[in-house]
Length: 174
Length: 199
Image 1 (spheres, rainbow over the protein chains, first blue to last red):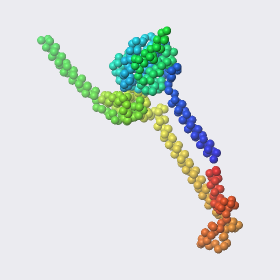
Image 2: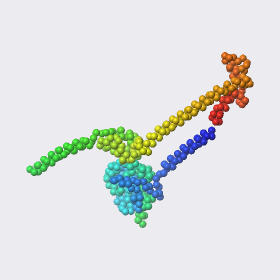
Image 3: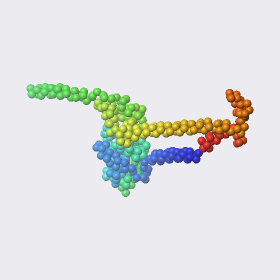
Image 4: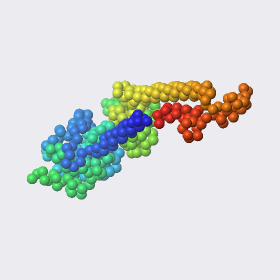
């Protein structure tokens, strides 16, 4: 009786342990504001060269996850391009990451909306998972030290950009 | 004159130049080697996490459009799947590749079934052995009682070799010393059962 009870307890503990492990691993939701940004590599849309966020260390970066089939991405693209035109340069850039998208479709989208900022692709969604995105579009403002300063799920427009991102960029100039 | 000659030559060039090109074009839109239905049953929608054939998401529509373009180019099903892996990574395949670590996806269920079958066999074998031992012990029990004249059995009181009166013998068999109304037979069987289940 004691042996069987002990075995049953061990089996139950094993299940509880597995459940806990599963919950803990699923619970990680990517970086939050104040955390270091992930260094998951992404490849350039044009030539497939690998990069990480470290390659942009020293400047503010607005990382924007998008996809060509995503309607809100179409709506926010003009605002992001306007931001790049106004503030893009040595100290700041928008960085687009097309996630789980057909590369030809991504290029057509970029051409259609005249996006001039650097574009990368996330073939299998591993980059999006590392950043804890919940869908597309989603944007992260990263400071020159690689720390997440703003995390914005969903589409952004001009008003939100001026309210959330531009003040941070202006602060850096002081 | 010269102008007319140039125009005539140009027309000839266009006529004969288009010939091979049109033949080439016909060859480019080659015979389809597969169909959308065949491919979408073997690949996933990477965003939805379902088979492509089951998904109506916008991303799935783009993936289907890509597959149709590749079918029009005359690619085989395997070539199309290779292109999809190049676009989306190996997770786009509904079945993992049967090489490297992915082989475990096929081997683990087979090994698991074999182990379960062996465990089941062993469990049944042990249960049957225990049952046989119990039956043997029960068969030995009553013969021990029959050999004891002090048990109070009415053997000497008109016992019938044909079996009549066996009911009387059963009724008259002694009550066990437990005082719980069980006969010795029943009491012994109870003890064996209790011991077997470790109670």
